Image (tube, rainbow, N blue to C red):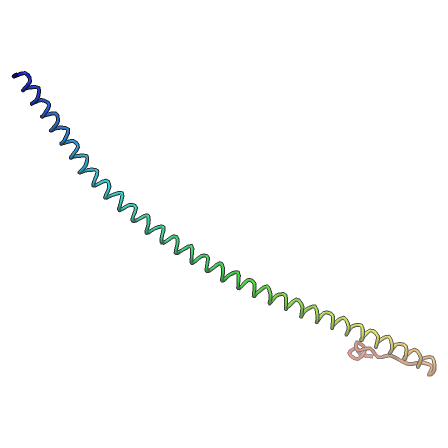
Length: 129
């Protein structure tokens, strides 16, 4: 019976040691859980900040796209206006050439009827004779 009592006493001591280790693990595990919860909170805050920054970037990209579209339309309008000016300049040059051809024809006719006719070019006005 003494032997059984000793055996029960040793079992109780071993059980008490096991309960002590379990209590220690639960206690330190709680600190680890708290650290994990704090890290998760920080990570959630960082994710929220990233989401806000992404939203600002998306808004800026949308505004840039709108501005680029407006600029593109402005450039298209400017190209159209320049094309109109080029067409007008071409028509003006054609009209000037036609007038010059007509004037040359008139001058040649006068030369044939009057003998000699001198054509004064704008360059001739600035040179000394």
